[in-house]
Image (cartoon, rainbow, N blue to C red; front, side, top):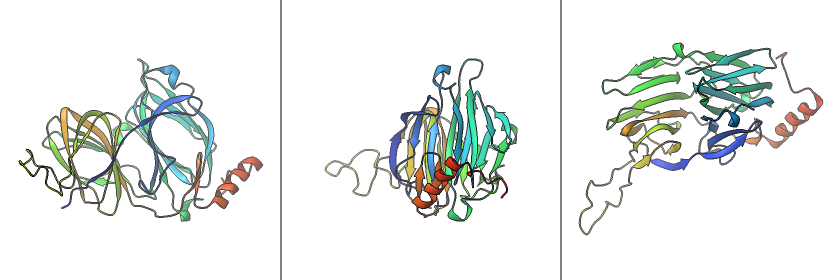
Length: 303
């Protein structure tokens, strides 16, 4: 077994999106190959209603899948296919934009004004860029949960883990999407398939992600750290950890434990042409999409 080394450690950056929603962006609109098949992760946790109520009014998507995971408050949605509804605390909405969809997402706080959640974008391979759009909406009660003997707790949104299978199906990137909580002081090893890209996003507590080789507990006089040793990565709220290759992630909970998303997927290794809410493979396809928006032929609901 090989521990995945920490390749990058990033703090999510404040960003303004939609009609004026204040959020934190962990990654997106930059180097896509590091996170392939994922494109973007936004953390829209906010306790000030004025900073999120303007929401994300009607806008298009093509060529991607968006995954919205709500922790507190609700997100009301509607789309050009006639779907509408709301997802609340613990719920998941997985939207395959495919050939094109126009939708809106309007966050509403809970009774004390909290709106907490995440949105992840997953890329679609070229063969499925123009697939038929669809929604998968999963309620909190339908998401499998498992607690290990040491108290580590996992909610399984998508994929296979510890003998459980997540409720979201038929996703091109075949991702595993976990919500993991590790108790204070506990050290936990979590399997991740070697061929996948993987990252963790911390949103509660603090802790340490072990690197491929641990440093000595006490540096040896005249030697210091062993030449091959890499210090572990200490992380806290809004830390993004991008892992290198390996088949397991090792984490230890801090004083108050640690809670994080652990996401992995099979890289598509395809060219990316990306502008705003539309992600294609070539600039010509991108121009065609925006031309269709202007001409009113963007939606392909007859597919």
